[in-house]
Image (cartoon, rainbow, N blue to C red):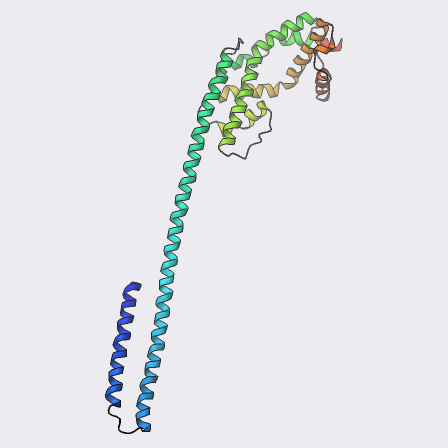
Length: 279
């Protein structure tokens, strides 16, 4: 039975009982020829009964009030649930909008990076070509063993043509990946990582991202090779800097401290210096 029906029944019962006992009192006490203890006893018993009746009715009213409050609380809870669902839907919609906006930026930035790679003049004009840039070539041996500045410079030019554009693309790719992950609120990655390390470590976050995932595999493989061969690449850079100084006859052509920094790195990693750096 609903609260509304219960309220109507209570009100009807009260009216009915009050009317019946009012009629009884009139019939019992009218006409009163004299005030006697018996007359007062009739009134006393009647009023006592009415008092008990109203006490019971008050208790029933309290129960009805509690039931009504319970229903109101249930309605409030349901309304709060609806509001929470609406808020969650709004948040999800905002997240979708943010993701779509970020993806649009990613597409534009990747298009520019790929365009620069194709126009670089290097051997690798697409990420699919990065495998050749990863493989050691005869120029590596020259940069490590030769003491002739001219030979070292020529070998480094071959190396740069194969390796340089790919390294530049990895740097751009890393910046694009960081932009996207920040845009979607990913706070579980370390954004301070260097480009090669960032791409290699965070492949799981990027493998399902449109546009990024299309170029992820060859880029991540190249990044991994750069990490594995990092001491060798430091050695090649040192050979190039020393060869530049020897060919120009001036140490000022190289940024101050660059040679010393590379020497310290190779020494700390127990790696030999290129032959030209020992002369």
